[in-house]
Length: 158
Image 1: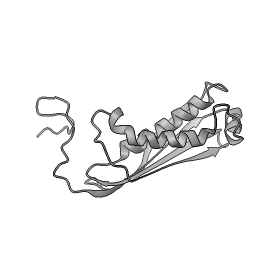
Image 2: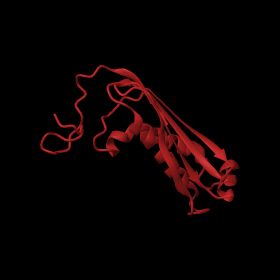
Image 3: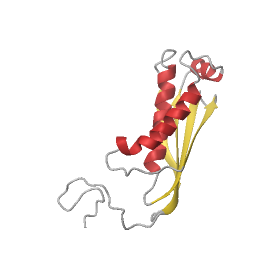
Image 4: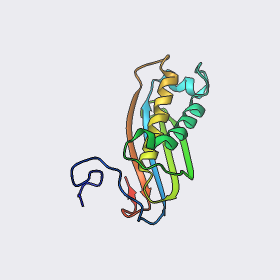
């Protein structure tokens, strides 16, 4: 068997075979931030963005993205997500930013790290899209896995 799980013995890409694995309870939490201007942060807080309620739309987009991860990342297994939470924190210090956190939970044979990371990324992109008329200089930053539980590799904490 190849030491690289996503390649067969001939070097061809493949999905990892999880048919023999036992389902376990798995969670993953990812986070990331969008650096914004004070004007953008105030407009989000005051519900003054013309496209609508930025955080509600971004929350729905993040949840939808979690459920579509296998369609976006070639070797991801389609998973039956059992819970997904996308939350936001608006911060003024040390610099204005919107921080997104996405937690995904399920009982399954493979982890949900990619789903949590995808949820954060799409939620951030949605905030950008809805606010770009005010300022296109927003920067996505620090997207990373905070923690995961379950599976053969056990727990991870950033």
